[in-house]
Figure 1 (cartoon, rainbow, N blue to C red):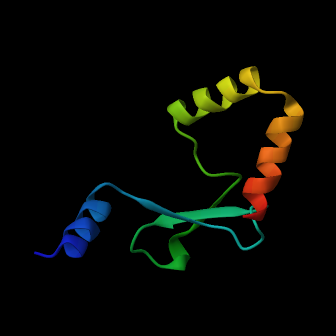
Figure 2 (tube, rainbow, N blue to C red):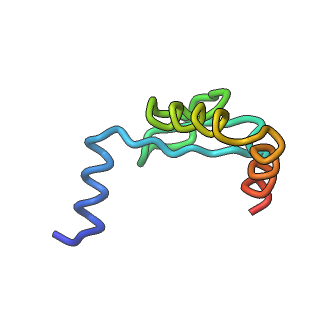
Length: 78
């Protein structure tokens, strides 16, 4: 079996989600990989893992707010 087919099967088994936003992040939807748009659900923001949440708090501790806001602006525009 090819690598791409194997990966597709893994994503089906692991309940991988596709995240989409029609308005540059104001509204975020998600749907299971391989499903149609009729199965999408609206969420406020993508679900963040516990590890990423801890990293975000560490960033808030380590850097001034101005630097964080500038980094967010750069990330949003790239």
